[in-house]
Image 1 (spheres, rainbow, N blue to C red):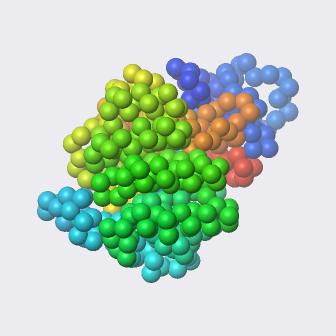
Image 2 (cartoon, rainbow, N blue to C red; image 1 turned 45 degrees about the horizontal axis):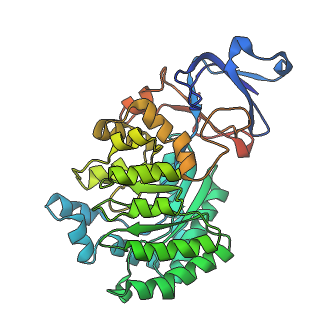
Amino acid sequence: MILTDTTVATLDGSATAIEHGAIVIEAGRILWVGAEDELPRRFGSHERRPLGGRLSTPALIDCHTHVVHGGDRAAEFEMRLEGASYETIAREGGGIVSTVRATRAAGIDELVASALVRVDALIDEGVVTLEIKSGYGLDRDTELDMLRAARRIETLRPVRIRTSFLGAHAVPPEYARRADAYLDEVCLPTLEAAHAEGLVDAVDGFCEGIAFTTGQIGHLFERARSLGLPVKLHAEQLSSLGGSTLAAAHGALSADHLEYATDDDARAMAAAGTVAVLLPGAFYTLRETRLPPVAAFRRHGVPIALATDCNPGSSPMTSLLLAMNMACTLFRMTPAEALAGVTRHAAQALGLTDTGMLRAGLRSDIAVWDVARPAELAYRMGARPLHALFRGECRHRIAGVRS
């Protein structure tokens, strides 16, 4: 098939989009991209599909989500509006621990069913690759069920799933003030069991005063390395503990949140190739005032990705397009940076090299939009501009198509 009469934003580093472009796709791969009047003759027999001048971009990638979970935390939303801080709610038994109770009470079928509602919303906005974390079980059985639920979603929807084991998300109540014991007795053995079952693509942790220290996260990362698994980290969200520098020292795929990251952290991440994943939904919901150091990331050449951080507490958001708008409005990123953040750099944050750009040889993961310019994707709030969505692995099964 040849997609023709389209403006093509390749996201391969090119500064401008290709007007009157064409994309040749076959067997789930891109064969050629360029101006339509330069289309090689060897593709003359391919079926042509004109797109009416619409914009084509790489399909979107949400590289940080917690879409598998039980319950909700609307009551905590009200508490925050009345002045309670995230840390206060967590220390009083709310926050992550409250979702742990709801998730432990849910069966795997219930976890899948509730997650599919959120996943469908993301697909309808052009997402074909989705990272899903565990971390709301904090015991062996529930952590494994969360990962099994994430894997099952890939069989039920046209979406590619990457899983992250987040057993080091919080210390469960039964291990209060015994974080080391929890890691050794529950978290690390569960990681090994999940890896043996083929449920884990990466290992994540939460390095924060209300969660785990750099030393404890280092212990986790060493076990991940022994299993051949890449790592990533929730770091510098609420304070500066050096988590992002620790992540860089372990060659992490990404460090995420980063409101309190420093120039030295940015330098270390750049040297390691660690992606900065910014999560404006959590920043907005928690009414944070400390901005992530975007200028430092730019200065040192740290790739910046964006994600929804979809979770029941600090970012109950299922719109990656809204995350793009928030990143531009709140963090002063450019629309071009925001689009790269949910395509090329998001792929890098997941360790994927076969998607995130429109380039010959890569998967034909393509979103077609009812807009004229790439900047409109970040500019419009609440718009639903997706026209068609191609997922290479499904031989161009189209989701979210509008005629």
